[in-house]
Amino acid sequence: MRVAGGPAGKGRPTPKRRDAEGRRRGPAPPPPRTQREASKLARANRPDKEQRKELRRRESEQRRAGLAAGDERYLPARDRGPVRAYIRDVVDSRPHLLGLFMPLALVVVASVLVPVPAVQQYMSLFSMIMLIVMIAEGTYLGRTITAKARERFPNEDIAGFPTGWYAFTRASQPRRLRMPKPRVERGENP
Image (tube, rainbow, N blue to C red; front, side, top):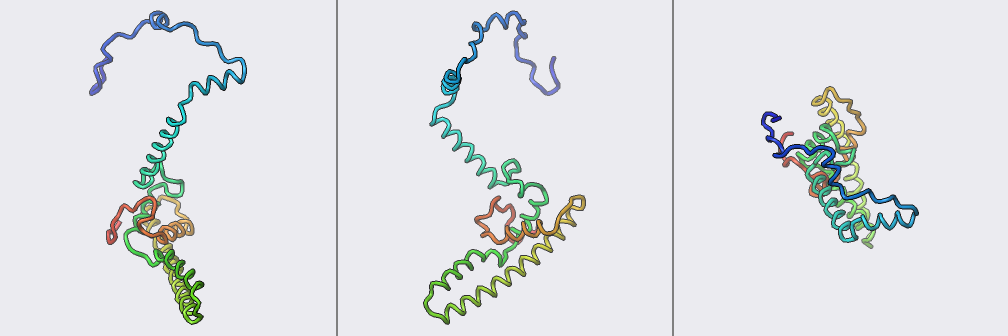
């Protein structure tokens, strides 16, 4: 029978059961009687080390590409769903001072290594001011993104702190190191 738009068939009749059973190649092998026989049989049926290594490499490559592309199947649970995708798009659509968090950590380390006390003092003061500004920006960003997400997805239950924290951590990463990769360019309105 032909289904509309589908293939006409396999081109041959389905074999009778007795014909199909008659073509089998003898009886099934007996099950292993000892643990040693079972492990020997399992080793014989297992792919060799190089094949397993190649398979793992291909799967890892596929997962990494899927994660970078934002494919839902490969995302961790914290990144899944349309709400989280929207949050990522909003955060990625503009630059944030939070993105300077890692370079600021280097300034803090450098302030410890500099032997001049006056320079240490100014670097520490600068680091403290920047840290306060970053925390204030992160708080503002979390509140505004939570409000935007609740407005955009009225039927979703969007908790304030987890949403804000997700936006804060996303914004604190340098743009080129973010995973999944940003889908929007800076300046776009998601």
